[in-house]
Length: 396
Ligand SMILES: Nc1ncnc2c1ncn2[C@@H]1O[C@H](COP(=O)(O)O)[C@@H](OP(=O)(O)O)[C@H]1O
Ligand SMILES: [Mg+2]
Ligand SMILES: [Mg+2]
Ligand SMILES: [Mg+2]
Image (tube, rainbow, N blue to C red; front, side, top):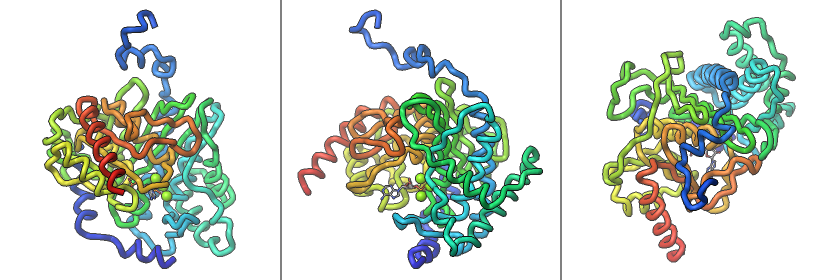
């Protein structure tokens, strides 16, 4: 718990507070390769409609966001626990996972349900956390009651535990699996900064839809594209379906608008995103890559997959993520974000340019890091990444 109080008091002013507002920123002839988009059109998965699943995912993520916003407004230290890996988890992480799990099962009753999600109920079944479980159950029921169609629903504590534990699926290359991060960026959430509810659907190992609810992200990108929103309006819902592009709308339900990644081809004009937390990504490596590229702007450090959302609408042009040695990325930290960016025209790869493989279970097996940008900048970025990694290896 000591660690928790440190986290709570680390509510940095500087970057954090500004960023909540600033972010806002944005085989016929085997020798002739087929263009990517023609491949997409012919892929059976790309031509499938996930209309019902997308509607259910948007409803689930929006309701979960409502729960998280309520908790963030009145965060209490008792709402924060430490998991066995010492990372923080709050009543909102658990509540969000229970709400999303409940809504998906309720909205899609005819489909078999498999959910790969970050949290599990282990700690909540202990004697000393019964009060916390009670609070989560109340939060979940209050949130469901705020949505007309579920107003008569009342879940018991045991129902909530079961809904959380639906998320224990291992995923994999066959069939459909939902992938959920109930709060991505819990550290940002605790600071009052950026976080996201990130929900994606895998079909035969590929991400086919993704929804990112970002309650603290401004609807107005930095540099102010011509959008019909007032400048201090917060709360974005990004959603993408394979072959259908990426849209954003306000969390309170404005009409969706198609978004596209930045079309910058001169890296000097690009700005780049990275984790707020230096423990999550090597800031010195990103800065060496940016320097090689000639990027002039300072890094934009924000928490969570809000980075993918902001990138999908062109707020910045590059996202660099280089975890410390030994860290294994989880699929829920990237599934929704990656399709939000790729459907907006971006490219998401590991540090050697390989696409991310979400079919291997709960973890992503990848080479070194994750890099994201548009198709024009990717070759230059890959070169800079290779050079910086080589220099780093020879200096160690
Ligand atoms: N040492 C580490 N290196 C890289 N990522 C880490 C990490 N420790 C935690 N993370 C992941 O980084 C995520 C947040 O990403 P970001 O740095 O972009 O905000 C966390 O998601 P949660 O907040 O859902 O636990 C967690 O999964
Ligand atoms: Mg976590
Ligand atoms: Mg996460
Ligand atoms: Mg999380």
